Image (cartoon, rainbow, N blue to C red; front, side, top):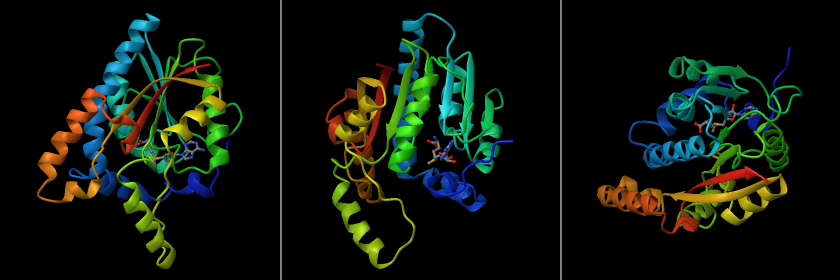
Length: 255
Ligand SMILES: C[S@@+](CC[C@H](N)C(=O)[O-])C[C@H]1O[C@@H](n2cnc3c(N)ncnc32)[C@H](O)[C@@H]1O
């Protein structure tokens, strides 16, 4: 039996409390992450439709690092076969309840023989790259590159902390506070340029990019929240200022 890694980022979502915090706080009904997810869902559905038209066959999809099934529950019904893979049994238990038709597996992607080669028409990888250790980022992308279908599979990869966004000053401040009083908060950032370079180095070609959430998340906790939400929605729908948005989505083909 494969033994999942239990150190570093791979161990972060193993405890029931971490799973509950992800579901109830990070993706609580009125959280900033939930607002961004509302913006992303129609885009994701349109991209799957686009991929369906491109390949002209029933789509096989892998949601890598599927976690509690947030993305899989939205995209699974749009494809012929949906699979999810995650290292955390606790996260996958929640995903099973949300995605009864999906084929879910608990495994470490870096263990040998975890994924079939040249198979998936679509691979989604949300909220994984940013916080994982840099060496693991590369190794995982290399694995996904082997598993994506050649030549027309598509990787939809998300980075939820753009360093070139209006949230950056708040993160600099929080990092400074974190040094004085550590809380374990994840405060990483990557720019669109860094992500593009990483994807290129691991064998992907970025074909399209989208951005979600231009305005600072703190505004969502003020009386200006309605206006902020409407403005972020308009900007995301029109594809404006995406390079400076907080949450980035890259559409890639195997190079
Ligand atoms: C922040 S969660 C994202 C979950 C989901 N993609 C979403 O956007 O809601 C990151 C997930 O990556 C998983 N993970 C971390 N390292 C992994 C590995 N080596 N193989 C498979 N999954 C891994 C964690 O267990 C966790 O569920």
